[in-house]
Image 1 (cartoon, rainbow, N blue to C red):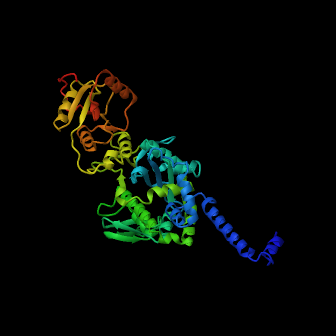
Image 2 (image 1 turned 120 degrees about the horizontal axis):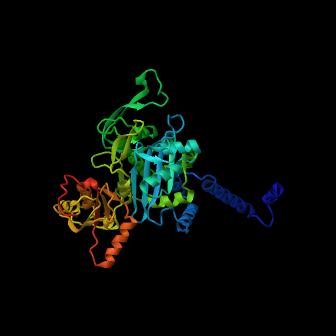
Image 3 (image 1 turned 30 degrees about the vertical axis):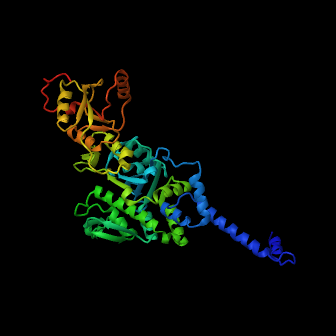
Length: 488
């Protein structure tokens, strides 16, 4: 072969232009080999870095077009909700390195160009198969101990069960990877809403220092725009002993979401992404410190959905224990601090996630965001054996301006907790919130089959107005009951 190449490179009387042509073919071959290696040798790449850089290469524009126009769809694309789980772990060198310090569920709605982020606190107690009720941050660690590499999938399944929604993709990054990627994109710009100090931020490697005060460092953040390198961004995201209202895990979750938004904004300023050396460095970091089930073509298509989304179309939610929050403080069987759903089950959390984007009418209406009327039609059903409970509760709701179109008895009488079924499907959220406040009822994410059958039977018998809400009263609604009113 070498002789053949030498012969081909010899000047020939009848082919004076053959050498430049062969050289050109060689360059083309090398170029395509590099592109092939870049896309297919490894399966994990940094989402923000990879696609923006390669977008600048003409040949990749063709590849991108093929990926986007192919019959293949992203998981969740058909239902217009692509759900991603973002997990942050300490990693090697950290105590409890496989415990999830950060849990954020991101949801992309392609048709409306919206993104939502829901932060789940690590202390939320959930049922874990084989372990009983444990903090949610244990799921990844338990799975990794049982089978290395299975933590991301196990966490996806557990959180999917919690939210009653499929988790399509997961991305797990350790602290080292978080720092390095932010450094590799030359830092991020973050607006600090509250100035705060943290006098107890742990110093890695000093956990057992005999001098107790040498185990911690003092952090200080001023209000306003701050440019943060990887180390500072990690401290801002992890701090949990801050002053000025920044000392809770819930405040920390909000800061973590701000960091993610800042990374996205920096990725759109693509100047640094044109540097192949930086891209190579980021890819190496991803390989060493990130675990994901997202394939290359899926990243390309997903990035095409989210890269143009404006900040005002990003919805930020945090599950917390505030007066209007969905969680309450508690203690586990071993006395450890935990958080539990306020309603006693996960129905309210599931409803929040299901309705996090609102309804199509709310999204497109020019009056979206304005206060809606409390007027709503309600069917009040007594789900207990307490006489008169339905009538008394109906009078209370009527005084709020709500229209009671039915007062009756539920065919099921075993309700301990009142339940609201939203037949407006989110169109009357203010009325729903007021109804919930007045009744302290759970909000059910879906209608049970038995209730669907009863509604269908009613509609078949007569032309009845469908209510906006059905509330089935439980024994918890029997406050100051005298038991002397009418049976309904």
